[in-house]
Length: 86
Image (cartoon, rainbow, N blue to C red; front, side, top):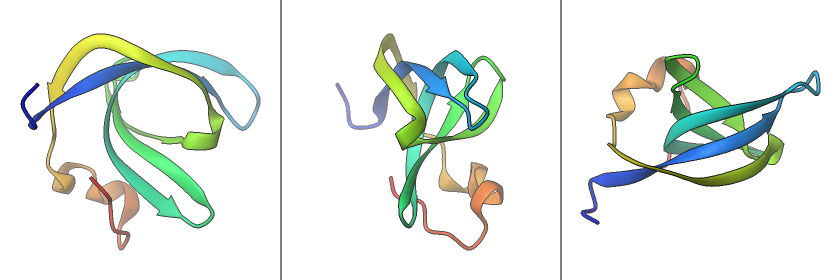
């Protein structure tokens, strides 16, 4: 697979209020806000950019889809002043 293509994921995610949802995401970047890691993603259910705490992802499987990496500038408004890893 070319380096510019990435694999989408199906995840089961538990929110802080313990509600569980299933999502299909494009995981673009990682963010460490010590001690918590976050996945900066495009969420197909919500049709927008979303942040998921890695420790609240209960399950992750390949979604059978690929995507092109979006530029960091698309996500920067979510974490102003932080360095996104990608």
